[in-house]
Image (cartoon, rainbow over all chains, first blue to last red; front, side, top):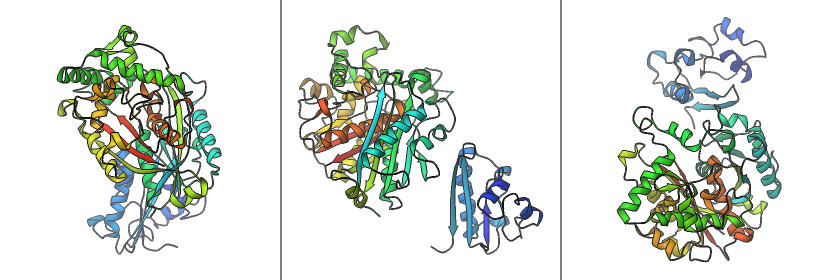
Length: 109
Length: 379
């Protein structure tokens, strides 16, 4: 299990994506939500920014995910900082989930 | 990081109202190009597609033809609208060292969508430029009027460009419009937007074009005859037509000078053997001669009069017939590159320029030439 990851994710399909990047088994995406794993303070905080369910600029949405992830790993995320974030996952999507881009940001090269 | 990037294969299919879908066209040129090069889908590094939501009549145009262009579950991306930009993007992806090969593909079926003026009016903002009917054709007409008036050039000079390019197209099996005509014939064709007449304006064509790029190591594995991209650049001018001098071609000058610098070209007219440029409207070919530094400002028509850019001239421009002959909108930049590569391979058939060693590729986008891409290809 990857430790200290801040998932900075798109909101609309959060369950689906949590499943597809294999943070949990198929059909089990609800479990990390129920167990608080993806809450702030959980093992894998997801969308500390509020995600796309909170703010959706369409074309700029994926870039914002990268920016938020960068803020997290550089510890500049202010009041929504995940403590000691070392590695962050972010992604964008296009079409009807046809095109997916994934980026991992880390403090070490 | 790879220092050198080559074109190792090209394929195109262009014409009028081709009875195949966008997916079908994309598949055909992709498959043909990959078979020619002898590369499998699994081997292919990345794909850069160029199409447009406007020019395909649907959002996320690329999702419709990715899989047809070898992109299924592969690293693939899109350069909106201009496949000249897709060439630049593909070049950079190979140069980055992440990929050893890249398939560049452009596709548009103009026969399935509204007219060029209708679609390009959507380029104009809804508050200032669209209400005064500024679109690609009317912008080119304003530009042509200014060209004629400032440099005291007659309407017939635009007609001469059409005569040259439509005649060249007679020898291009992928040409949409090909004609053996006179300046008088062009002048008799109906006015579309003064001073432009029907035969001085690009047609609306169907077509697709694929290019395979490779780094030095892979290129030498795939072919004995790679065509090197020795220079490439692009620049963009201000959006509002009123904010720029339509004859200054600042973006074209900057892009070409950078491409020349990369390729070590000092005297383009002398050092280049052939040029494939994007001239949707006849006077633009003259203006681009000037912007590309083939001659000084206002001298474009003189270059044409002296026969310099004819098939047997010092620098033949658009042996393919150019965009005045064939205009598969998003694919036209890639078509220029494919045609230039064919010239350097000596595979341009009846439109071959003898012993071509260095070629220029040009692509344009936006109203009055807002964005220009320039690439130099070399044997």
